[in-house]
Every structure is written in C-alpha cells, then in structure tokens.
Image (cartoon, rainbow, N blue to C red):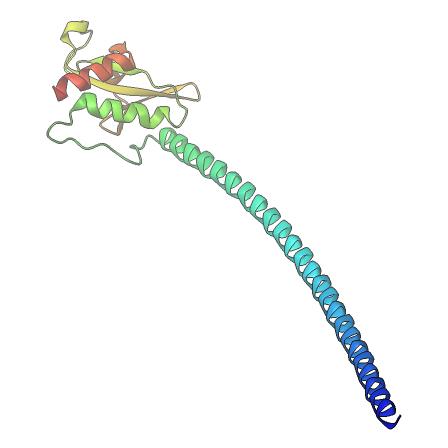
Length: 187
C-alpha cells in the first residue's frame, strides 16, 4: 500500500504541477494577447495619425498648386503689362531677333509674329519696300510686323519699334505666306 500511496502522491504532485503549468501558460497567453491588442491599438493610432498627416500634406499641396497657378497668371499678366508699357513708351522688344547668315527679315518677322501672338496680341504681318512710297506688291522686298494693342498700332522691324510712316504702309500677308517664305530660304 505504501507503493500505491507514493504513486498517488507523485501523481498528485504531477497533476498539481501540470495544473500550475497550465495556469502559468494561461496567464502568459493572456498577457501575450493583451500585449498584441495594445500593439494593434497603438498601430491603429499610428495609422490614424499618418492618415491625418497625409490629409494635411494633400491640403498643403493643393494650396501650393493653387498659389503656383495664381503666381503663373500674375507673371503672365505682368509680362503683358511690361510689353504694353514698352509699346506705350515706344521701346524695342525686350528680346530682339538678330540678323545672321540664314536668318533674314522673314525669319525675324516670323519670330516677332509668334512672340507677340503668344502674348495675345493681334499681329498683322506687313510686306513692303522701305525705300519706296506707294510700292506695288511686286516691289516688296522686306517684311515686318505691326502689333495692335489698345487700339494703337506699333510697327516692329528686327525687334525695334518704329514710328516712321514707311513702316505703316505695305501689304498684309498671312502667316502661311510668311512661313512659306521662310521655308523657301531653307531649301
């Protein structure tokens, strides 16, 4: 009987140990689950904070984009005002074409035509002869532009502003005719 008692005691101790171990594992598992829950909660908070940061940055980007577009418009308006002021005081173009081999008056006129047209002005292209008064179309040997701004005409030849009467007479030609003349020079 003594052997049975010892075995019972050993079994009891083992069962108590196993139960204690189970309780210990349960407590340990419960702590791990709580830590995981806390970590998930912390990560959720971080995610929410990052989403808030993204919304703030997106708003700042939108504001900066709006400001950039406003500044671009203001810059364009200022450039037009500067050119208009240039016309009023009779100044040369801010950026002038220069004559070079292969770049003659029709190239210069095309350059000025696009320059002023891109700023929104009406720009007739004039063919004429600066040495003749009342020349016929066949006597034309030169081309320049006239810029219309605020109801006034401003003659530009090689980027310089001219007030002489000769720059205000001649024949209006089309952009297509001018481009054709430029292309003929290339061939």
